[in-house]
Image (tube, rainbow over all chains, first blue to last red; front, side, top):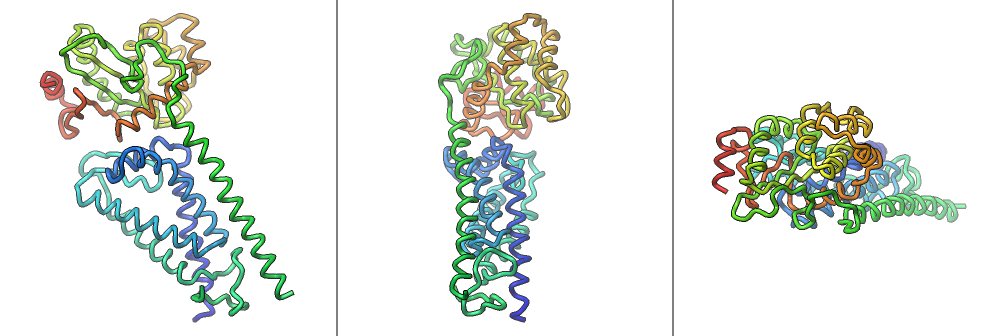
Length: 162
Length: 223
């Protein structure tokens, strides 16, 4: 079983990293909308929300690329786990407070007509991605990546040793 | 060999990390700076920086409702709003019964920037309201390439603008800096969708006051 863990890790890296790259790329050239999406959560002070609207697409691209390449997998996975967790808090509070917003996960965002908001899909997706991030933080040694294999397991790159 | 190999791997890895993080940081910083208000940008006629770089009508009136409209010329819902409430708002302007500020946002894409710039050029010609109407009456689907500056220049004729200065203002994107300032002001004002209408600083009710002529009128008169 251990033998296959690095392959599972590779798949996890590609899914998590790929999703982050797509999400970052789609927001990248419509930053006004991205700012709007963050503001619509009504969670952060406006100047900070506007900053995050610009910062997040870049951040998502950076950790997404690092995950796909398998460079500093553990740190990138940990950061993306934190990010997904923050997204889940944002979406849940918007849902609980009855805001009508588009999650803006893959571009778009902002207020939508009452009743058109969908919170379940992004929450489920982010839950899955958080699990992948946790897995990769615990077992960051995966197949086909730039991270060097730990000395203890040069052949199969078994993880869980820090 | 056993010692050199991991070292070499790490070197490559660290270079890759440095390049990825470095390139994105280098792109992030100018992007953040470009979103700052550029106070030296050229400003069209009847624009007030104090009023969020909006195009202002009846600024001098006292004791009348202040109507602030945030819109994007490419937004289909804004076109519906214009169709339903445009005449009424224009009548308030001509009858000097309200101060009206048009904030032309541009978050839907490059053609929104073109249109906002062209609208600013029309303000210089004193024909903003007519051009505003012409834009919505001829609104294409978003970012289909229809609203090139050539087309926007010709569209001026629909508002009775025939001057060369208008065409050159549109083609040279004279007010691009102002468009970006107006967008930044909209972000500061926490406008998260278009159209957004504030009356005396308070947003009207999104449930029913935007698309009901009577309720909108009541909201304006309530002030």
